[in-house]
Image (cartoon, rainbow, N blue to C red; front, top):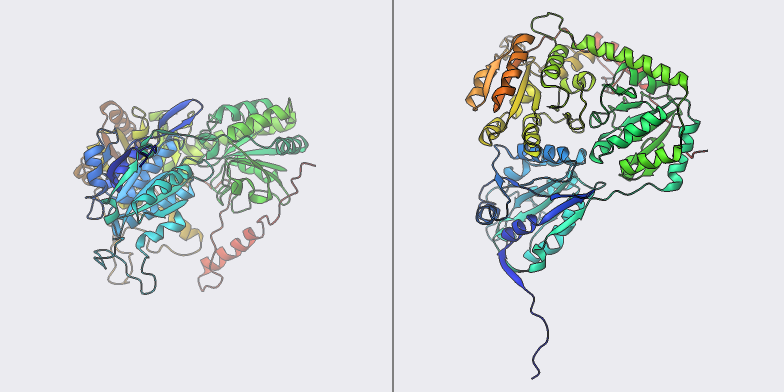
Length: 636
């Protein structure tokens, strides 16, 4: 018999979990000549579903592959850490997260939703029930009478950008590259989920050596179509009162320089969203502050009279559009976005492309165009009025306890315009958007796509890991702090520097304020004892000693009853390093104004309460202001 001339394929005999660990360590991203690890580490809480699989693989091979494993206190928290890390890295790197089957994995679902809503890449590796079904039903397995292959991990499907279950080892050969493609695509990215049955994780297979070869994923920068760019330029030239709305896509693209060049050359005023804040320095003449339901005077007044909106890198959520009341009927819209769905919102002229490429192309096409001098003067006057209003809201009014606005001003002044402030939920995000001043594209990190209580402290960890040496200040309300303070322990264990300003307003006071605005009396939002006389939670306040609690978790903690105390505590935290919690009571009387904005929160159509009836009448008036149609955007 003639000897075979076929080449023998080189393989590695590894378990599925071991192969996954080796493959993840070989993934890189590259953009603009900078190459970095896509997955620089893994966060994990181990249980019976992954301790013998991914846990074993990470212990045996992680150190040699420079793939460290981090241990959080809560599975939701570790996904928030990964999301914040990815955001600070402009979505070019993220963490993988592994959890055991059942509650460990479903605890990650909220984090997955947050990542997908905010277009942030996270790689989730939830453990799943036995693929062989022998120990059926396994511990923590959900049984369904009609769908025998259904598990709780199917809950990830609607909140993820990519989902697969690996029921045979060889499936990973094709599933992992596809998962990584979605993870690194700036238009498709979000939560990417690879569900791993616990028996499959430990199954061995002969993996082709090429599966472990280094791979560099180039993060694309698609340019806009030239004809659409020309149409957008024609609309801008024709407009008398154009307004830019700047979203997070500008920062992720590294397009701040291009935005500044465009705004300076044309005079176009730039308003900010939560994710876009910091794209321009606050003192830049064209930066007219935030727009929408939690916007400021200048941007909201310009938006109200604008005849053209240029939305760059923004999802145009309801807070940005003030529930479609920020603009006038028939306003024209240009959408510049790498995500086609976002570029087409509000009936916009849809210009699909990378933010930096699109802004640079638009500047070239506009070729010397500048807005009218009278409009420049109006913008300058409104900006001056707005900055004066911000100064007023940040001023110490000598009230005891101090106002939330003065606390924000004190923290901002103490840590400077280049530190990163972190927040997510309650009244703080709106006040921070209006009052915080930053000169740094990474100086403002507020999650408001999902507005997830509990995000703040884990996010602070993610930023500290993404950029060691950066001053990170978490501002969190007491209600959100009580939801996920456990990651303070993780910050202590990782020897991180983190300052947490805990704003104590005695429970869910943001929603209490909204409740009162809706005409209802205060109900079930304050932290009070149940009253035996009324049967409701309107008894005596529950006084939580947050200082002792934080100390019990290993942090340095102090009470700052005055703004002077707050400044001193922040200075001390900066000098000492480590994890510091500063508890600051604030009063409920002095609230930051609404600055001519509205947000659609439906009011009961029928009620016997006078306050609700009055609120309903106001609501109907505002609903009548909602824009139902937008102007033609053909560039005619």
